[in-house]
Length: 297
Image (cartoon, rainbow, N blue to C red; front, top):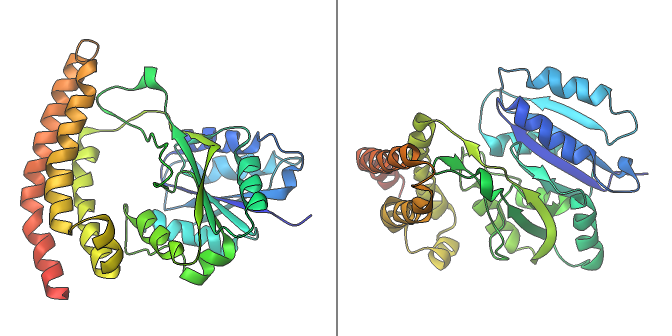
């Protein structure tokens, strides 16, 4: 039987989280485990990712085939393209290495495309584990039908090919917005609330969270590449970076996490320090963002 769904999982130095992700993908409640394949796209890991995936692939004789491909560290967009290149399914399903799929995730993806033969894609619901959330954890909670992050998304393979895949110039953010805007021009992407993925809270370091400010430069790249679409969804990169990311999101995060002050007082203080340092770092980086992109325009 030919492969129906190719699941693409980019990863970088998260072998423990990745193994949980792969376990959830292997243990899908689907009658034919050979109707889908799992492709792990290693973006230059230096932990035991390769050995873990290859050992798991050998031990899953009666389960979906697991393929491992690797490259030097170039970001998740390039890693996904590497996996898409070797995929054989008519549907490309996308998730992240720190997520765990519900047991009927593949089934819901297939049902979505079979029930709506004219659609080009489908996005689902991403939920977290409330009791494990702290002021300093990272998690994705997405139930909105208009927002389709690549941790829980599926497109027709031929459509991804037609739009040229992911743009690797987006190193760590906005690659999902870019490809979704391009795919929107090809047809309809629907929302399936039964297509669910868990994104457990993950503690990241202060330095890593501070460094995420660097990725805001992708707002300029997105606006330069798709000015009309960017105008429709956001006013301009300056407002998006300085107001939305610089003020609004930081304030919302402080307010949202205020309920944890009693349980995690020191973490909340660290969160305040992080948000202040991120904004100082943003002020330092912003002239460079403007200079580089003023030269391009």
